[in-house]
Length: 298
Ligand code: COD
Image (cartoon, rainbow, N blue to C red; front, side, top):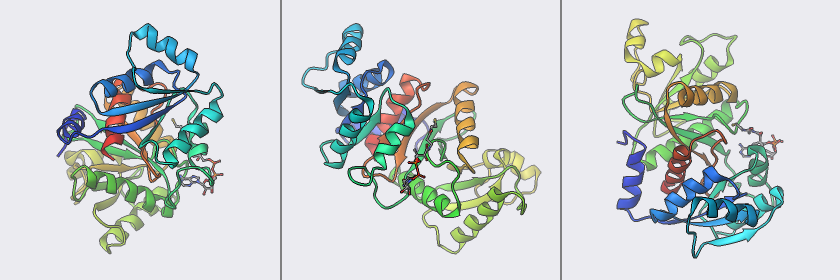
């Protein structure tokens, strides 16, 4: 089982995996640093699409050597994103990565009906955290794509994440469906959905995982907290995946973990034709690099 995000790198190197990654709107120093590191490690072969003059300026400043790498000059953000998405759609690249462009612009292109990366399932964001105060890696979903998922969306979001965790070797991930409280309250939709998801899991309508909820954050991540409240759950305190009620809660938790708890993170969009590295502009170079690793593993 993975305890640290650096375990992803060990596994990829052991399996000698190299993937082609297209960086959309490449004139972004943080993304280029992470891409260069992965390139030097032999993990990816990049294609850099963006304003070539600005991109080369950053590369020259850093003293990076991208010899042999394809550069495509397209200064217009939307055209640039379209070119990158099409490249993945046409299987000329294995991974799409967001550079210096707003998330909705990239996601709208990914969802384009003609040349986008839809597969017929819901696309969702998956973030994998390494927090010093937790005993293993913990995934959190969805903090960046689906704004207010309904029950059907939540099933798809769980399925996307569970499939990825299964790929990482976690055979039956423990999924905590978060609420503000651990009791079902008919005025709180998140707790109602949580109860339904748990029952659907018990009846094998959602497979390859163990779901429990509603759980409040404290009892989802702390066995002692759960015990104090007499919560009898095999998930409480040992959660592999936290399902968020909506994007606001998810995004605030993500940023709280990063900024206050100094957590390390890797994140990707799942459910598309290929993994998409979609970190936020405030994410560190390390988290962008970790996200590339996570995408390579997919
Ligand atoms: N998976 C598959 N198809 C989808 C999804 C999805 N997650 N979301 C929308 N669609 C399809 C719909 O079925 C429809 O066919 C089409 O796409 C358009 O749907 P809309 O009108 O609901 O969606 P858009 O295009 O207005 O917006 C989609 C976004 C993903 C851009 C939107 O949901 C969004 O802005 N999400 C939050 C992104 C964000 O700001 N994240 C930053 C956090 S740091």
